[in-house]
Image (cartoon, rainbow, N blue to C red):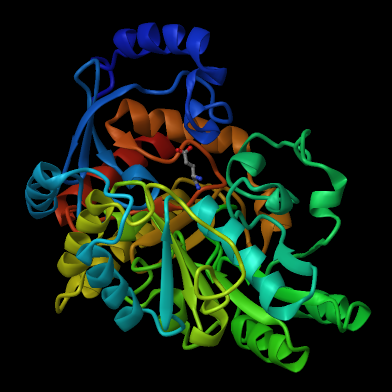
Length: 432
Ligand code: HOZ
């Protein structure tokens, strides 16, 4: 195991300059390592399941650029297709046939999606879907869950997960009260709380949006009956059900969490994997709702780079690679081996932990559990997680720098990678 040769001098030097140029030295908060301490690692290149920093250290990567790298980084078929597409141009700002190809793949795969609109990020997709929920129902209020993260648009920055949870931020300054006055919140997995909100506002709720499997307060699966209950409640009150599958889409299964759990929402947001590592997002759903979107209908939403040929190409190739027999069995097998192994080692080393996995998504809380919602996740031993994170980093294992983020595996992770990770975990856990 690598411990003594671990140096990060170049990373530190580059990050010192970055801090003078960019807020916190980063382009997105979670990666700043604020909650685990130490300095972020500055990376140079990626390949397969591995990532190399500017000091030459190699890591097994369980962040996978926060989800998109499910086929492994720089897959030769994705890169080859991108090189060909690049020669033809990076952006047309006009229709291209690649949009049809990816749209058809998404429609075929995701049970709720009959029509789709491509955008450039998950944030954009969620922002647009909220407008669509309101436009379609003519209602203003929306229910979101504590610790779920739907991007950084004003109306979602209420009890949000991901960076907001990681940094322990209260609601963000700069968000006007008027923007969030129609955002109602409930604890995740608490159907009674949602029932109460509907009973109080029977004619005012446009819909319910959630991560069907939470990845932004750590990994939290839905309790049995929760998704089904939301489906029935929204139908009863004439509201829409929206699954934010930016993280879970094409990861939990090819058809996402909605396919895995057999619950079909009215609308779905996607991102990450469908762009194969390039900036992309999408929202889609029932045809009668999607036909509200301009220019078919009156709800306005637009984007210069939306549906650009590079993002479409990377997405198409990535979905082609995923849509093969055995893909998800493999992802589930190696991820289960990792998750079970971590839980077992932690227990043998005397730590109170809980966690689990579904397909290629996993989590481990330093918390006796069970964790059903963000309030439970918050009780985790964050100082212990920080020491664990640092120890793993020093041994060549790159984990998300927050207890409140999920872990991701890819088709490029081998059994040997998992064994090496567990060996490192045993060393670290025995000294925590
Ligand atoms: N929203 C991402 C995690 N859920 C964080 C992205 C980043 O910091 O790069």
